[in-house]
Length: 425
Image (tube, rainbow, N blue to C red):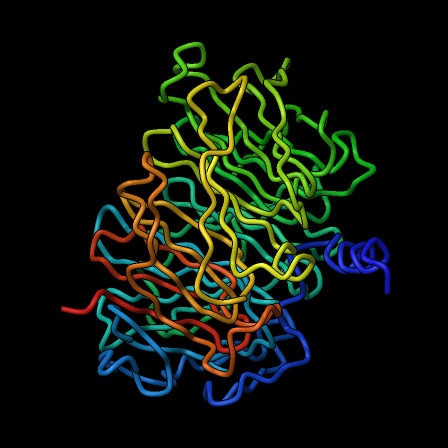
């Protein structure tokens, strides 16, 4: 079939969210993948049973999982949460107790797991979806609150007080949201800039006031979220990052900068003044499949981008693009990293000199970006939660969260649930 028709079909397939991660391939060998009813009413929220406990990476394998440099601490499959698929993941560290929690996105809600003692993790409970189930859910954290959106119709934005997790006496339990913002319906993703107390739902209805772009929601009082505008000059935004800029371009020091993955381009805007956001520019690049998600390096000089369909459309191995943002008004493609497999790249996050990439069927890949200035990027470690293959399909790892001070990394595999790993000794 002609490429343009194939691409139209593929893009239509993901218009409502990231590419379908619960595709037809079964993830053979990844444990019992029993999905419960999880009907949103709390009648079945799972038991939190651990599917597989601590397993070191020995000789390139941790039990059935290929690995390099990371050990498995434990796994909880989808049946543990009475879910049929999983998606996004984020983490919260309680500043009072120092306990660490995985916040696990599921098709029918959001699960909360205390991972502080990895030998005895505790599934504390589940917040059901606000309306109906959806394969696409996203979560971020502001202070002690989880901010949750979904592609489910009329879902809005749930706000959940994470401090409740301190006092769960009979886990798991069914939780209720502490607030719900209904100024949006469905949303593909949500961004939080903790520095200024705003949430930014993106990927909303394409015919809304901001063309499916970004909405500005004041969450400084988290249980009273307040919409104060938005930005949609560049159309639908699939994913984004918002930062208080402290990079090399002194023209924007201290400004709040939005950078959006807008399907066929990268959009950059100054959204400091919520009543008057202004476009800085857009970035295009060759062989665009679907401009999906990216993250700044900590010095704000480079932006590392993943394209979700280029592996399928053009036959690339996993391709990661790096843009030099020294001049925000005139970004330049700096280098391109090509991974060792044909797996599709999904969400990626920077921590120091490492880039943690959710690479679908190739699992979590850890890239060394310490010499990114000289265009040197190398893979230093990985943990492959999908051992069946490394082909370009939408199975396997959806997202990864690397920001716990303990060094634990939480991984959400759409077929096999929650994995917690840690760097090998």
